[in-house]
Image (cartoon, rainbow, N blue to C red; front, side, top):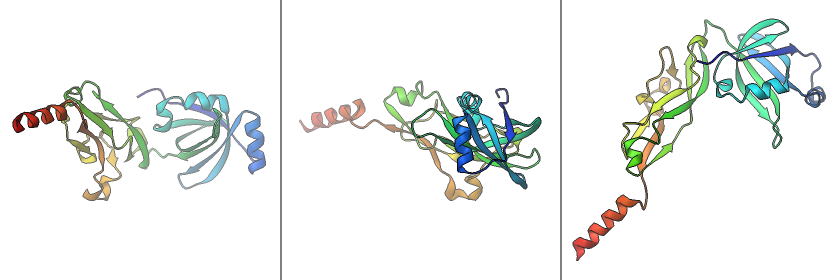
Length: 209
């Protein structure tokens, strides 16, 4: 795990669209912090700090330390709004986390040995069917990502959620709903019109002659 991300924030009392617009013009980011059975708190963060922090993949899938007027609060990012074409973050939603209560969130999937897998070297094509997985765990067990090793996956094989080894203390939200929610995560398929099919076609023509 990488070092925990810390962001400074201040409580804001000037609310509404006009206030949020003024904040953005001042290079600030309006945000909301909610959850843990507490009243939502409106916050303001420095845009430059948020923009730098969100460059890390872990920003979206790890517990962040919010320093709110000198008080440390643990939270995760639940939603982030961006400007449609400018490199600007326009709003953030944070969810408070309690060390004693499980949280539900999504984490990215990292596919290992994608280029060196034997199936890929033999012409197979990797199909990413899910790039993130919904999980439930205590904040202390929250992984930044889930690894799926493709080294031994064969052409025509599909890897489902039930075949992925999750870190200790981490559960799949979908699998908890039952076997019918055992979603496909990745597969390796044969290349259409590839060398293998051409070879088969030539063999068939030879038999016909």
